[in-house]
Amino acid sequence: MSHIAECRSNGVQILSPDINESRWEFVTTDKDIRFGLGGIKSVGQGAVESILEERDASGRFADLQDFIQRVNLSKVNKRVLEALIKAGAFDSLHKNRRAMWEGLDGLIDQAQRLARQQNSAQETLFSLEEFDDQAPAKLELPGIPDWPESERLKMEKDAIGFYVSGHPLRRYAESLERFATATTLDLRRRSGTVIVAGMLTSVNVMRTKKGDQMARAVLEDLHGSVNVIFFPRCFSECQQLLASEEPLVIKANINLNQNNQNGAGGGEDDDEVVNIELFAEEVYPLEQAEAAMARRLLVRMAPDVRSQTFEEIKEVVALHRGGCVLSFEVETDQAFVCLDAGRDFGVNPSRELIERLSGISGLNTVEVR
Image 1 (tube, helix red, strand yellow):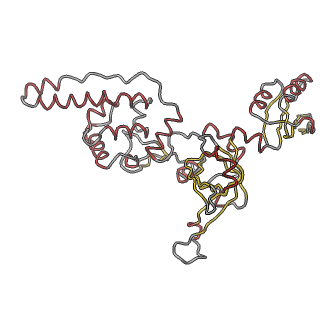
Image 2: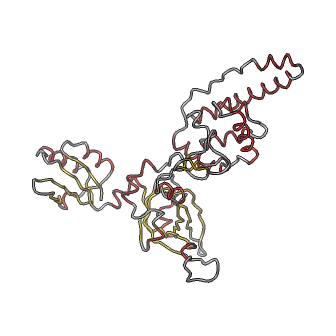
Image 3: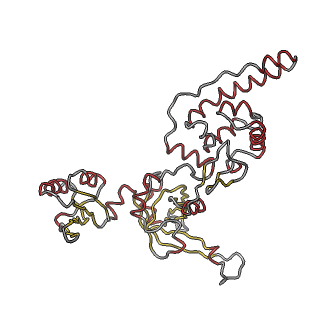
């Protein structure tokens, strides 16, 4: 996954597999890279060769029905078709993956029935010509809503091994960037304590020699993944969070294990075999991280702010007391002036408070720091 993130950071997009564009391996298209059909789980070489042979001989596939009627279903069976749908390989033919999934049985039954009729028609030249003149009936896919994005992406990752068309963390990108002091790509160049944010894709609970529970997990962000170790004290405090599928913010210490596979050491290529782990110290749900880790809530005021605005702020803040400093940035004719509200006006920078403050006229932005 880190290679994909690196490509994207360099302006190279990894495109989803496409039944009319992909070959067995990855192929380049202008500045982008198209995912290969051979990289999809449950899609073997025989199936891909059958698909490419038909496409090269008779042209692009018009829709899912056309595809199923033209390919060899003994090689491109239902399991292969489902994997192609999950991977997004038919998205250029139809955007609704769930409709294609649910409509598969009907399309396969029709194709197999037509194949049997064609075999029977081969008994006489007359009946075969009569059969060829009859176009198969058009079957409409079910008119049902697509899977939720989270489910689409989960199935896509199951089929490909990572996310291509999107990422479940994308909608949290702004919050992740605000809290994280490092991404998984940065860790090799960092040391000491960092704050990372993402979602756990696997958690393996184990016991120490003393019998205490701990865990090893994989944290994934928008750039890659890293192993995270939760020692007994931290594990006991955050055990329930580790079972959550929601984004987490983790304060951790970087541990670098340098393994020289050649048994030498001190060479120029040593960095290539550095294993990075994080030892977790504190864990917060993303939704609560603002309140738990924030030190300041900064409210930027419009130049023409009214006195009534301060009264509205006072009323809202009174309902969200906490230990976070409330500051105001006011634009004057000469400069920007930043003022702290004082200890009596400390706040809990919850999402509700931020939303309510953002709705007050005369405030430009509300930021957690």
